[in-house]
Length: 156
Image 1 (spheres, rainbow, N blue to C red):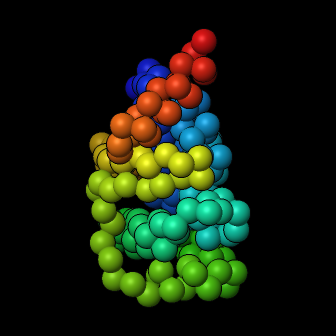
Image 2 (cartoon, one colour):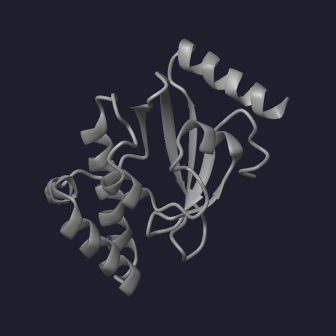
């Protein structure tokens, strides 16, 4: 399904926020949206991921909320404890975001470096693993047009 979506960035991540599947458009929109990337590590440890974008706090809060939600839905495991420990030791912004009590938002909007604002929707995949499908679309006309242009370039 993810690969069939040619005009919408789409990815699936596991309960540790590691990308399992991503279409090519997702990787074009954000370098962290590629298979094998841990979205939490990218958010908190890659310092230039969203340079010049003013919604970094919101992104960090939502990633921390997704990690908190994962441990509430599934028991802690070694990988989860190691990930949270690493982030807490290496990132003050993670500690700040972790301390908030915001719930994970099923929908929202984020801005990206190239000037696009994309709206997202999270869908919990069926099954016990805790995988999440994340779909994106342009949040405004300019972003929709730019996203369509990138998709056309990739398919052409």
